[in-house]
Length: 191
Image 1 (cartoon, helix red, strand yellow):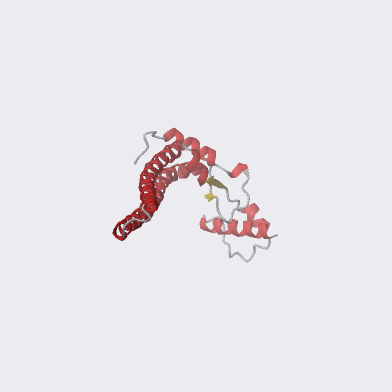
Image 2 (cartoon, helix red, strand yellow; image 1 turned 120 degrees about the vertical axis):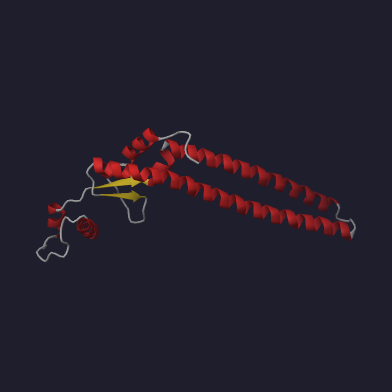
């Protein structure tokens, strides 16, 4: 029952937006009549599939992996220094107080450097990921519009979404978008 009401609400909303009916029509007695008289054709795009399966999406993912590897190499270097200082501190347990303080300061500085490096890495990777996602989805938007016109669709929704529980294959146009996007793909991919 609730699913029917939701679909009718969506159909009425879209129909009003598209000028296909007056949702406030007092003569609309049957909610099913709305769906029959004013059918709304829509398609679904799975955004995660576009990001993961398109040629450019794969190129961008590879770039992110390389960037992550570079950051990890830097963190391993700092981590190695930190372990060396800690080992020296353990060996020199009976050293003079000045030497102990120096090793303790060095340890604290390296720990701080490590935390800062990890934070910069996280921010850089998140920023790059968002940048690549925006580039890909911006290019995809024009193709989505083109595809919607070709298929005579009134609306295209993106999933995954918290409101989407099921999508029939007949309305999923992700594979068609991937084909268009890959056909247009410039494998050198924009920066």
